[in-house]
Image (cartoon, rainbow, N blue to C red):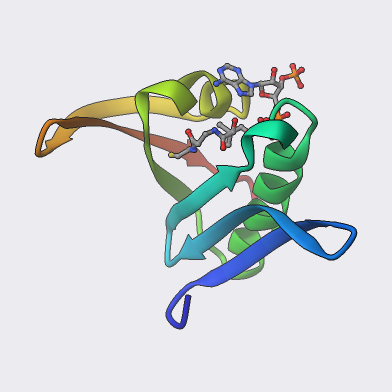
Length: 99
Ligand SMILES: CC(C)(COP(=O)(O)OP(=O)(O)OC[C@H]1O[C@@H](n2cnc3c(N)ncnc32)[C@H](O)[C@@H]1OP(=O)(O)O)[C@@H](O)C(=O)NCCC(=O)NCCS
């Protein structure tokens, strides 16, 4: 967290979701299971994209888990390749940001 810009979503002062920007890469996008499907991920990603635009980032990249690919697709990200970190498949996705 010392090298990334991290946003959190709060419910009554309790952190229920996180997302961070590391250069042109989106990282640490997690929503507590009981809060998933209620817009927290979407809201945090909107903040990340706003911050990236303010920094003149023209393209964002996200290393997605298999389960989150549909979420990022819904937000306009496209799969460009798949890589493996050990046994874990990572789906690398990108999105061009309009200025
Ligand atoms: C993936 C995750 C970040 C999505 O956050 P969320 O708060 O549950 O998503 P939202 O409620 O903001 O959903 C926004 C939109 O994406 C869609 N969506 C959410 N998760 C989805 C998924 N896994 N597949 C397809 N669509 C999905 C929603 O239906 C919604 O679409 P709509 O606006 O058309 O109704 C969250 O479910 C999560 O933390 N999952 C477990 C950890 C994880 O996989 N993190 C990603 C690591 S790369």
